[in-house]
Structure formats: structure tokens, C-alpha cells
Image (cartoon, rainbow, N blue to C red; front, side, top):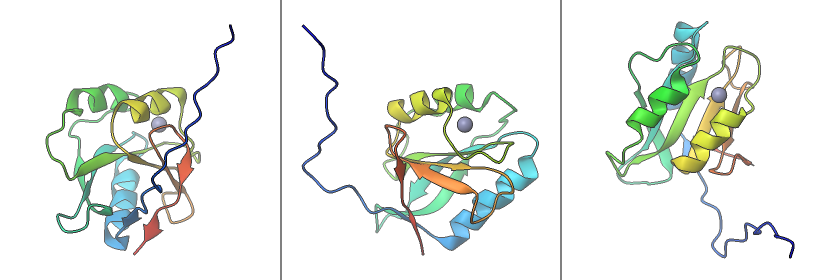
Length: 138
Ligand code: ZN
């Protein structure tokens, strides 16, 4: 008997994520200052609005190519306002690698990848399945 892939049909509407411009600017700054290494961090929402990303928590000591290992170590639900991850790529690609997709599926609901040159046109957001999602910049 053939195995059918389970369709991802959630009955509830997808969350409408947003991020403050200030937070996004900080992400770009971190990406630039870490280059040519990757930087990794956690996305935190405000206490009042659980879908508004306002802060990043940097993972200290992130080194090139090791960010995924570091993420795994920090993947404990420390804080309910932590909703996902952010990391940079030292390349123009903001598409998730296979390792990224695995990371996304294990932890969090929203993930941001920033590619070079680390500006408003070089970032993307994904859900847990690696599907591209839209985040409003507010
Ligand atoms: Zn990546």
C-alpha cells in the first residue's frame, strides 16, 4: 500500500507575524559584524503581542558553520516569548539549507535567514516546514 504524504491542512489561519524595524535593523547589524562568519540568535516577541517580534537573543560564540550545532544546545524552551530562530548566511542566499530545514522542524514557529548584503531585500522568513512566509515590518 502506498504511503501518502499527509497534507498540511490546518483549520486555523496561519499567524500573522510582524517584526519591528528596529529589531530587523539589529539583525542586519549583527550579520554584518559577524561576516564572514554566520551569526545565530533566537527571536523573541513582546510580552503584550505574541506575534510581534521585538528582540533577538544572540547565541554567544557562534562560529562559521557551527551555528546549527549551537542552536541545538540552546533549544530549550527557556522562555515562552522565544518563537524561533534567526541566522545569517555568508552568501547572497537567504534560502534554507537541508540542515536549516531540520532545525526549523525541531524548534520554533518562525525563522529568519538573512543573506548578503544584509538589507531589506536580502532576508526571508520561513515556518517550521521551511515554507516561505511573510512577516510585516512595523
Ligand atoms: Zn542556514
